[in-house]
Image (cartoon, rainbow, N blue to C red; front, side, top):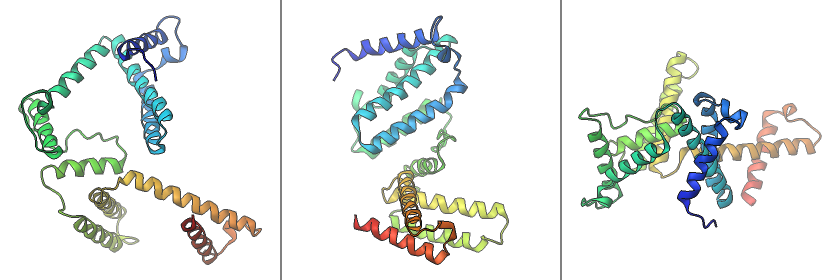
Length: 265
């Protein structure tokens, strides 16, 4: 592990960024704008998530560094525009984290994590200048839909608007599935879309109460489908046939065989 002072290294990183954007710097870095960098910020965040799932510390270190570089890039653009500097950002961040944790940096006391969270929300409301905001305000619209639904539900649960147990949420999934079935194939598209959305929202709620990350669960399910489908293709190819030439019954048999081999591992 590096033994240099982290503060000094961070200062060097800022110098590197300034050099890249300055006269004689990198042509690519110099032409980037806030808009052009948006895809990279999102991509790097997802690569961090993938590294977390892989459990590889070396890769996680690299991906977190790439994400940090995106933050530094945006701050450099802000500095060039005379809006704020890294010192401004860090000062505001430290002040906010200190202010929102009075049980750590002050004389407040909390019993548990839930009470600490409620205190955080109360302080955020007070920061609004007296205008009470909705507890579900401020959740980015650009979040992936499953994650955004989860965050909205989590916020609502903080004030007690929640199922007391997963069974209630699972029953709601069945109810929404029935409502979708009632309009599927014959209802107007808008109604079908609304009912499907309600079903997905209910599934996310059930996942949250079952302590399952819906995004991760769907990723895993998609990966399983891909693996099974590829086994089906391999089996068809081994028999000298193309998958598309098989009947649905033959495909289902190959699918069941693929699932069976998966359980044997």
